[in-house]
Image (cartoon, rainbow, N blue to C red; front, side):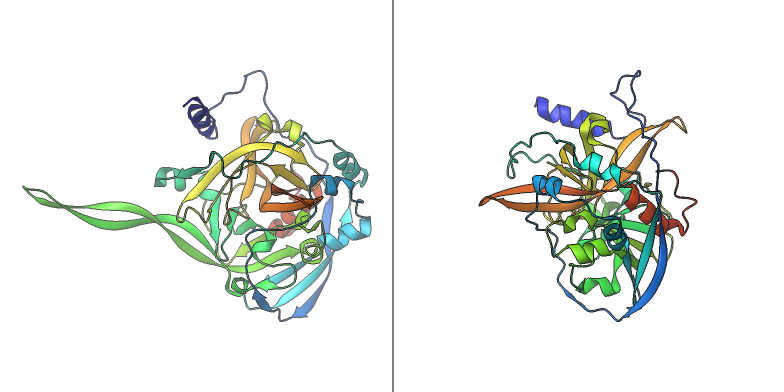
Length: 378
């Protein structure tokens, strides 16, 4: 009972204006020196194939220790990883090479060298800490209203007036685009009124019962980094498991801005939050929060309960924005999914989120804004 009460209190504290923190301490968004990622050359790749099945679980044999021991990419490799493919709604495909400016490679070595906290054994079938969100007052209001359904079976998050952030593996399996990517759509929850007739001994009366349905908008174009397409076949492809979808028309809802992922020690209580459409709860939006246990430069390892379908959810935190003297939520990562690692013949599982690093922020922001001048506030 006490555990449930604690969970409920934390849940309430995710809303605006409700705080448990001391008034003398506010976890604040750090000031980050941001690099610039600019397109250099765009080439036509011809018509792509759409013959892959959407896989909502990502597998890899490289866990946290493996990542920390892997050699850091060179500057040329970073440019290659941050180059990207753009898939258009008419089926055409381009590849864009990029240049990187103002990035200090030493920052990667500092983060990668951090020693994470020891990871507790995951209880896969233990107490389920997820909350299903019901009622239009929650579902249609911020921050839950920023979660949308991607037609290939994943979740996405509204990050601009016409843009949705999701996982790359929802669009591309590393070798080919998935079958549903050619006519990709994004679903928005909205009320569905159903007429219900009630009878009693005196009279018959009718009233409207509210359920939720999806309203779909077509995707105009999709950006997928080459780090995912080139890296998915090797041990560390999850580092670039993110994609940005541009809708054919504005969605007219409040969205959540992206931000650079702070170090775990700076996160409020070391926790992250995200909401998604888990497959085991069809029709429900499922919210969860949990503590981050391990970090590398590109990934967050955590214990959030999640099922296929939650992949692509925007991982966010709420921190104090000194510049505007207010609390602000930002997306700091993309939930990639479950990762199974075989370590000396012993299988281990992790839940993994791809961090929005300064380079990824610069890239995604440029995809959204179309310029780097408006991408200076990470």
